Image (cartoon, rainbow over the protein chains, first blue to last red):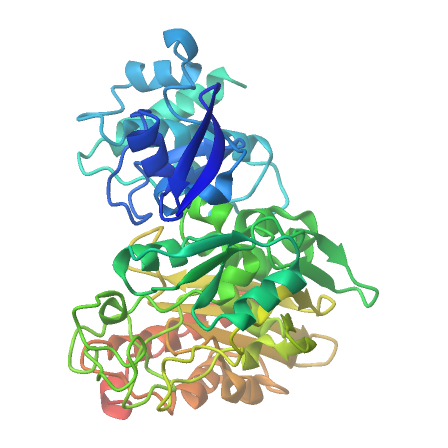
Length: 170
Length: 344
């Protein structure tokens, strides 16, 4: 059964009719042709589908599209409007923080969401003082990025890239 | 995924009526577990009632000094709430131990309680499972049991409850507020989940159509508390064993005495396991390594491990002792393992 859905994706507005089963990820890729969000495990375990929904990072594969009717969705593509790379994108490039690149759009969205969460002083499980300010140590970055799995062993460079972006956007 | 009808609920009472009226209807909150089950064929509802627009999103102070957390508050928002960080650090740490940043941004407080076991046989529809299909048999017994129960299991089901948050709520004596077709009722969180018995398909005492609307925390209690999770990798994995503990020590007298202790265990049973036997040993005792060990042993006396998870008895014992030692500042003195002799 078709339901009407309105989404703003990377700044562009879309209205479409979707089946109740359509995930946000499938709506982005198969209906709107937005390919920067990747389908990895499709079960919320790898993070390749991570997008920002109303500013918060989510696994788009575990979100029914209809639940997010009216939402503003940002993908890694939208974080680089007109091809103008963000601090985060440039840090990923500078540190060679990817190999095959499949997980990279999700890593970039997750990092953007994580940097915002840390800037709000939201604690993580490795934060010693739950009420204190968040310092983005390597341990903090690893923990906060742990929802994004990459099999090519580029973790070290991803941590370095996120750390650089955090320092530059301070 | 099977086709299903979709409705967006406008208010809690309407959501309850809609689901109550249709036996094949389910509530959809954050979706981090249900959408996965729709894909796997573990859940095949005819109607999905989306409750994401319900205004159950506030964290409010209660008159008695406690806290009321709306069922639709996201796990990440609850963990970041200043009052929860300050007054219930055990809950903040448990929430932050669960899943990943992305999943915590979606998952809700009510939904977290109602997530289903991650038993691999439950999630694999090609294998028999009494929880998924009553009477089918249990594939876990005699199978891969690393993540399965050592306490409270039955011959029909050895699955564990996966929530970290619920373990902290059990130690905190939280209350679950539930709205049903005939009105509201309140359930101690320790009584929400069931042991499997011969009805493992029923995770909780909730009736079909009953909606969790809020969690209530009693006023903060004295003592030191925290949550500790042991898992196969440093992050983003379910607990092999977890412990939520609070211990309040009276240091006024000549020797310190434990006034009160609250302990709950995760990863070991079909429900968050409140360790009442351990608490009874601790209450009134001097906080020493021997006391902690006696407390852990009192609780684990009933342990019935499976072939693949015998290590969890000793792991639980160690986790309880270590956490109590940390919380009381008592030097830790874990004796050599005696698990194989006494608990197989």
